Image 1 (cartoon, rainbow, N blue to C red):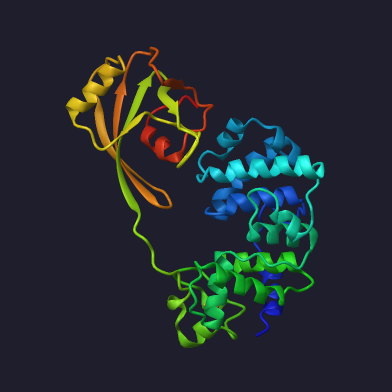
Image 2 (image 1 turned 90 degrees about the vertical axis):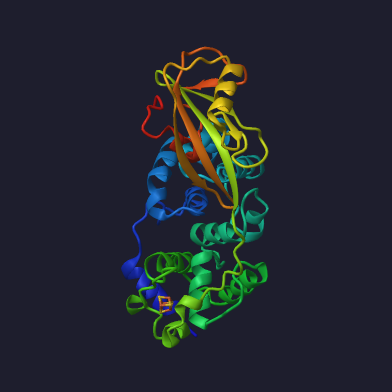
Length: 338
Ligand code: SF4
């Protein structure tokens, strides 16, 4: 099945105009690809622009304080990506004097770079014929060939990477980006726009009307549910916060003080007394939910105003600290001082 030619022809006419396209700078490709993991291109654009305006080179990122990098990442989620991105930048500076290596093998040895990102950088930055197999590619290939193998399994990914390696044309970067665009614009997960697809004449799932059976994503494990009581304690434009421990979910970022479980009014009053806080007026409680990859936080948010005073183990949020989305939504409707 020769899908390369129709896909590239379609790409030449319909490619998305994205700020990291056509720059050929491996650093810009790396930043965009890491941001695009788990996040849609449209949502990434403002973050990418801000990040590149402040940290335009790999040396700038390597030298930047981690807390500032995390702040620039705030709102994108999956903060380990930002940390790994910086580790990678530091390795490029230390090992290669700030110039990215151009082979897949060398790229794979850098921290935080897996086969997909290595393929993307090598193909787009160095014209190396390397595939970049992500969810878009797997969905399109599974439908094209009516392949029912579980795409969450590594052997399935490896098999498609090997097959695509043989299909790489003299425009490897464009071919990888064509897959990305086709997956984002046409071969959509739920309702593919087959009538507009350049591959519809080749696609077995289209011929048989079976697109909704592909790809096979294996069995989904239910997410763990956790209940939390979160304290959104305000004084003027500041909020009380603390730093999370380094390991685990949202490690090393800031958080609003919180306790496991949904506390009763009496328990909330006891906690405030322990912190030495006397609320100004009554507090309000509302519900918020935040969904992570493996866990769902069911939060009861206690909103209250208190005099600005020192509290052991806590500090006052100034807006410069990286505060994850899960807690930012607890401050919704209240000034964060930013
Ligand atoms: S024809 Fe439809 S199902 Fe097949 S690749 Fe194109 S959009 Fe996807």
